[in-house]
Amino acid sequence: MNGVLAGRADAHRPSEVFNTLKRLGFGAVVSVPDGWLGEMLVRIEDEPTMRLVRATHEEEALAIACGIRLGGIRTALLVQNAGVLSMGAGMVSLAQRYQFPLLMLVSYRGTPEDPVFYHVPKGRVTEPVFRGIGLGYTCVDRHRPIGPQVEHAATYAEEASCPFALLLSREDIQW
Amino acid sequence: MVRAVRPTRADYYRALADSLPPRALVVTSLGNASYLWAATHHVPENFYFEDAMGLALPLALGLAMAQPTRPVIAIEGDGALLMHMGALVTVGAVNPANLTVLVIQNGVHAASGGQALTNAGLDLAQLARSAGIARSDNITNPETLATRMRSSATRHGAECLVLATEPDLDVVRPPLGLDPVLTKHRFMAAIGAPRYVPTLFGGGKLEGT
Image (cartoon, rainbow over all chains, first blue to last red; front, side, top):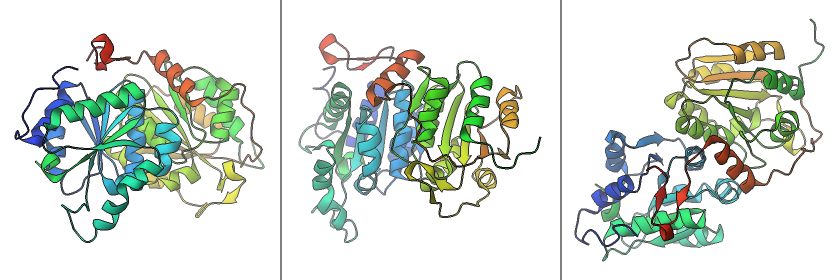
């Protein structure tokens, strides 16, 4: 795989995520933001090789991403874990049924490292729900460079023809 | 010409098939929106939904962004539009000039047997204008739909035509199976969408990127 060993674990991880998307030819990102994602979205919006779409709801964002990919442009979703909880029907009846390869970069809120009282209920059920709806995913390893992990997730989505989620910590995605 | 009832979906579909712009891509919502369109005008450039209610419009928006030189026509039902009304706002914000939204307004959930909508009397064209889609109108006959589809007027944004339609509750049997993966691959091949080149063959990217 091209460049998977590039980068260092202590590099600015959000920059590595951004640069990896650019290098892999992602032409579009569809998002519903949360507090960790805001600055990343501004950077994407300013990047001439990428198009950012700000959707009103994550299930809508999923469908927009499917449409862009259908039209021949590599596309990533950038959403909070709560957004994946609310896109279950579209996930199974559109993205998975039609086998759309989509990279999903998901801020993982409500973990023991993010014990915000209103995020905790979502964090508690995130992985069981992902497994329940058949959504492939992995959690980022903070001790390894983030760029190759994004690349592996993107490659998995394409080669398995399905959405694939990478669950991100604050330091991975908050600029 | 005086009509006792609203036109049917079939009336509008015949007019649409006769007035489709060249190189059009058509995305159809679930139920008869897809089944009747497949029976009326099946071509590889159709993308059929059979479920995923409310998501035909946002998918068509993404498609219009990715294929800006081709007309993209989304056929959505009023119930589906109400289910994901936020998508109308996103269409208004992105406002691609190559996207035409046709809303079948029949006042019921036709695909599930004709149950009443939450609000069957909304002025959906007014709603679309408020969402930022300036060229939005209520249409009451197929002839006007055809005239609008054939219009060569320069557009500066998306268009939304709300078609007053008589409900059709009998499920139309499509002339072919609408296998979802086949539908997707047939569509992508027809538009020449770049293939993904596997890492085994030195790729890991879409062709040409």
